[in-house]
Length: 107
Image (tube, rainbow, N blue to C red; front, side):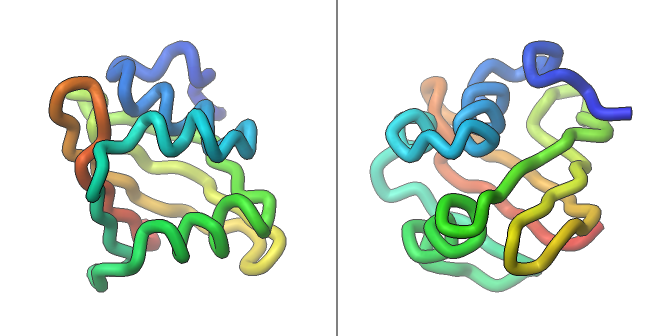
């Protein structure tokens, strides 16, 4: 059973997931610090290229299953038109109300 976005406890993570699910590039980018970084399955990736390919160009969507007590870790069913659906883990580093880094990979 998915956790509704409005029940995600960290407001920055909530904004990130809401923007991702809405396909809203402007709101998504607004949730990130300039120079934010990310990794996928343990390898650093170019954030702009990765998000365009894995989220925006392919209809990426997260259904959050669980969140850590601090709200900065999620397990979610992530799906897009390229890869279908997979269980993924997400970990966020937040500073000043913006995501400075996120790490994702299969859970």
